[in-house]
Image 1 (tube, each protein chain N blue to C red):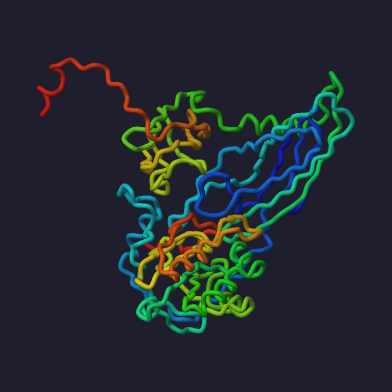
Image 2 (cartoon, rainbow over the protein chains, first blue to last red; image 1 turned 180 degrees about the horizontal axis):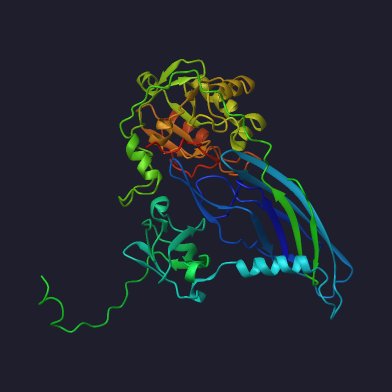
Length: 244
Length: 248
């Protein structure tokens, strides 16, 4: 695993590679020696950033660590050099486009050798632990589904729920107004097109007895037009007679 | 980009490349309060727009605060340019012109890309200006924001040799009426006064190079040929328009 770490100055932000009204996410191009395979970059959950004019973005502040899976070829020895070409847009109210090249040379550890760099190891493990997990693994439970053309997310006890759509998610016409709720139930109307609801659900739970609230994010991937649910057979006299 | 400390090895396969980001140096010197009188604009749905900004708008299906869709009439406006000269949309529509609006901020890297590096906008005006197309840049940045105000825009117009007016919309009213969120957001208005295209200038949303397809040129070619615009809407890209905070 390789990690690219951005230390972002106070008040400035970088952009998440999902649905945003402005900006663009850092571009990371890594050159690896032959035989080394790189995976898709893995990003932590962003923060919602709503500005005047209804401009909604999802951003990173402070420290951003992007993980890039790396497969070392069988039997590799000696050293391996990696180069990363990075370009990004950083904004506070103003925006600047910047770029950098960084490189890293690693010595391939021998069989049974202990990891040499505690800082790098800690950084990567922490970033890995912070990556969004599938919503099915949420604890306490988070229930997400599509009902009547809206994404419904329920997280009992939550003080805030937010949805951050991926680029390919079906449209979310009022994401600025309804993509975040200070309650335990989020209801976000979806566009009418076919497709999938993909993105991150961010759930904030108040801490017990004055301890700080915690926020966790989960990956969501649902069909936007679920097949009609099979209703349990109703007893004939059930509804129609009683209510009018 | 400041420090480039490199953290090294984790087992055989783990490592971190570390860099710092967030230029602090580039902060714009805030403009002195513009000497121009504020532009005359229809102010009627100002309040409505503000509310939506805070995400309080309740109506389902409402996309953003204001905003236009292709096929709808282009909202009328009257704005002053960097010389204090008034321009109205109506005068150009009345004259039967196709009008191209471009949301502008001379310090936004995306705008800089298309003026300084690739000359996209100057080329566009050079190609379609002689065919009767009117170009108007609009800056909806609030006073004190990056690239806002008469001075910064007059300087940009001069140094980039922009052959068309840069209109100052510091109240953001026109930007909000069109639902412009980015610089550059491009709007093409047909001779009938309706929006014919709304979206990005081209298909490369990075800040480094121009895209392969220029959607505005494509829309203009089609309108000038009397045919329909085949791509009437794309997702604009760029910096956020630096609107002022909601009043009240």
